[in-house]
Length: 258
Ligand SMILES: Nc1ncnc2c1ncn2[C@@H]1O[C@H](COP(=O)(O)OP(=O)(O)OP(=O)(O)O)[C@@H](O)[C@H]1O
Ligand SMILES: [Mg+2]
Image (cartoon, rainbow, N blue to C red; front, side, top):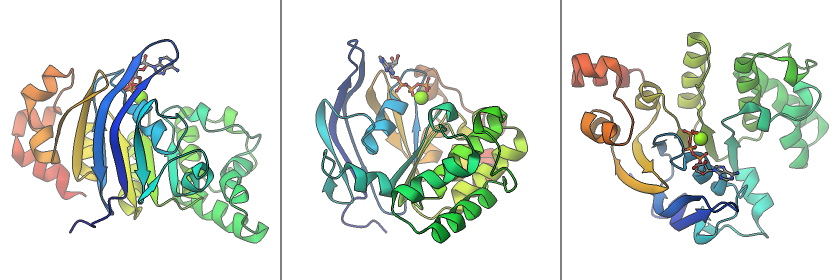
């Protein structure tokens, strides 16, 4: 059942980078409470640019964004960032403190939590991503996959109501990928996931938006979009091999794990 007030409204959003690149062109999307959304598209389609708008990291040129009925602006940006957590595509963009503990504690401290609560939140978040014992390590010395998991923990520790994940499974080993999928499915909030990992999206998402050259070119349920070989090929994407070989039977098998 859809809630009447959308959790997120993106209305006629366009964005041009200072160098003149038109990264988003008139994109309109509504997302409802409880939904898990996939954003797909070829490299350079505008997926990361779109996610960066949703917690105000990039300010829109044209159009507007509403988060839980509130229009995003300079005044409420701090409050919105507590509600909308973005896990960056590149963990290097997320981690800037000298220890894992400090990175994961950063959000809760900024939200004004007591020291005791901060410690609790950090412990819980690191437990979730399987990195208890890494508290005193320097984030920059970790492996790429470990950095991705710390980046996830820096957002989990804030308990955001809206979780934005940019390529959450890229470069993860199969076990870490599986764990990330479980974490995504176990996290009860609005989720927006941008990825090229279609099998993961089949397991995690309820609706799909396809971007290409900054435009929203298709939307639909995972079954209709992810089995549409022609549509995906036109936009430089590919259906997973299992779907190619076994068709809808494979889709249902992958989906069943959700
Ligand atoms: N800081 C920037 N300055 C100028 N152009 C940029 C900047 N960041 C991104 N772009 C351009 O904006 C467009 C959209 O980029 P974006 O990173 O949003 O794509 P994407 O869909 O996330 O791609 P990928 O699948 O490679 O992650 C691209 O053409 C990119 O070159
Ligand atoms: Mg991207």
